[in-house]
Structure formats: C-alpha cells, structure tokens
Length: 290
Image: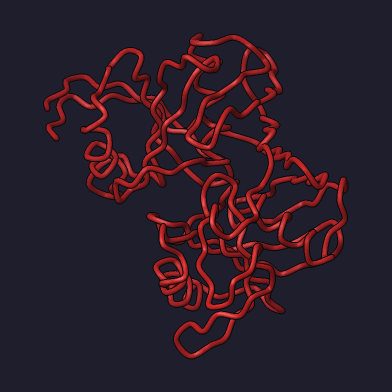
C-alpha cells in the first residue's frame, strides 16, 4: 500500500507519545494498520512514538479509538493515548463535545475535557471497573485462586510479589522499597512481560509508595519497553495498592511517572484518571509504502 501526503499529529501525555491519524479520512485497511504502526513508531528512521492511534467510526459510541504498539500488536486500552485521542478529535473539529464516549476494545470509555480557548488542557477519564479475576486478566498461577494478590513469582535471580490487574489490558504491579533503576527495569521488566504466567504477555509496573496519597511508578510496557508513563498502568497500580491497604478508596492518589504526574481515584468500583496532554507537532509524510 502506498500513501502520499499522509497527515498526522504527534501528541504526548506525560512523555508517553503517540502518532494520531484520522482514519475517517484515510480509511487504512485493518490488515495494514499494524504494518503502519511498525513503520511510523520507529525512532530515528520515522516519526517515532510509543504507539499509533487511529480515529475510527463507531456504531456504539461517539467515536472509536484503535491503538497499535511499536511492535504492531494492538492494545485493548491505553490511558495516556485516549487522552491524546480526545484532544485530537476536539481540536480538529471531529467532535466538539466536552464529554465524549469513546469505543475501545475494553468497552466504552467516557472522557471529560477541560478546554481553555478552544484548546484541550487536560482530560479526566472514567476508566471503568478494573478486571481482577485471573482468568479474565489473564494470569495463570500454579495454585488455583480467583484473584492474584501479592503472589510470588521467580524471575531470573529474584523473587517478586505481584498483583495482577487488567484495565482492559493486563498489568503486573510490584511494590518496591526503592525506585527501580533503568538496568533493572529493562532486565526484569522484559522477563516478566513474556513470562509463562501471562499468556497474553503483560505490562509491568514497579511502584514505591510515598504516602497514602502519593507514589512513584516506573513502567515496562508490553510491546514498547520502558516508557515515560502509562495511564492504564498507573490506574492498575492504585487499584492494586488499594487492595493491599496502601491507599484508601475515594482518595485521589498522585502518581509520579517518569514523564509527570497522574491523579487517580478508585472508589472500589470505577477508576478515574486525570492528567495533561500536549500537542507536539503536526506533519505529513510525502510518501510511505507498507
């Protein structure tokens, strides 16, 4: 497939960056989306990004989002991505609603936009209910349990305790005494991501709790590696921490990602995420073949 003058925007939420394409206009076939993601997300050789977002029609909601990782895999949900997606569709006059229902593979997500001077400054997302049963996440343990809470896993030369949560995509949350280094995040994050306990692989979050209202998080994302932040991972971390008594229900928790802060509130049923987004630039590609 050959495209000429393919226009796009690059957005980021706390350094978690995305290329956004209006597929209402370009109508890129489903069987080509993964290939395009692999090309456009390459650093140095192309635009470079943590993922590619497609704006698509929906029969169930106002609009539909599809997100592809740099390795071509499709994510069920993306917290930072869906905020960037909302900014794109509002500022490009695709939808001018300040409350938007967005269809994702996880289900319908409701976003509320904070707008100043026709620019979207931040987005509050109702992420819905976390998925906690092992079969649906999915996570497979040696012992048969309904939920995976503070379970041990042997990875290389270490034993970790992890809690499994899905926000539409799977997460393994590990609480640590110290902030994990780049070397260890790469080493253990990659090993956990593809561990046999996770049949669909998993995102991996290492979290240091600072107080009942504050935490520090580093993430190794499935299909992407180390990223500066992860919206769904931050939500999963607060859910896991609440289950373990580290955070309280209905109390906003400020989570410091490498790229900045997200505010997460878990009421025991739904998870709410709030954070900023930034448009980096608009551009076009003269010619691309994939």
